[in-house]
Image (cartoon, rainbow, N blue to C red; front, side):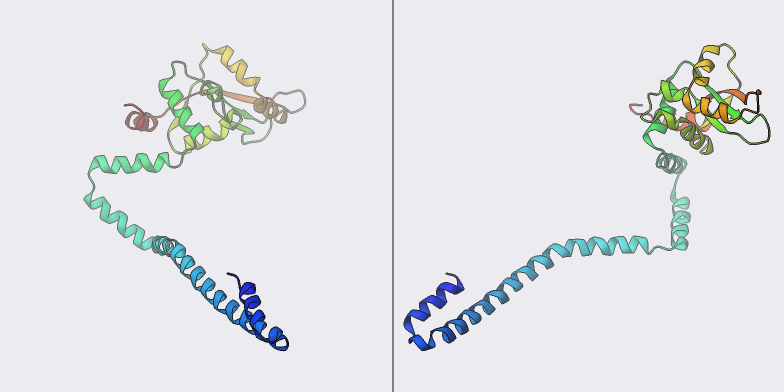
Length: 223
């Protein structure tokens, strides 16, 4: 029964002159009690739902409040307790956490591939520096999701010491022709021109470094 039903019932039992005042008074009293119960119920439900979040927040705050000094102390303590296998595992994990999926595909393709993919750098005809670095067909052979990002990926992998460049593969002229036809390379070649003189091109190959081979050997799926 709602508050208006209660008021109507009271109205039928009161003299006509008292109906509005008494009915409204009772309705207001009933509404007040209903609101109190409603707020009490809502508060209990909110507190129940907030409790897990608050607990999680306290845990995150505890982790975030660790100072660099605390982290260093923790690492030094672990270094005393670790053996060589555990230390190597920590290193592998830290490196893999810095990779994106396309970069992992490059490592897998270099490890399992037969041919050494061509790589080149584009230099300006005049001046110093490089217009484009680490352009490679590995983006095609590894079937990357973003093959246009290949130079960026290879640059990152080189910085991590996982891949390295080798000398030009003179037995693969077709590979270099295909690489020179890539859009990103053609744009760089145009930028590096000086009058009728073309930009300079350094031809190299791409391969896993010793560190990269070790990483793949210890982390490859199904090994």
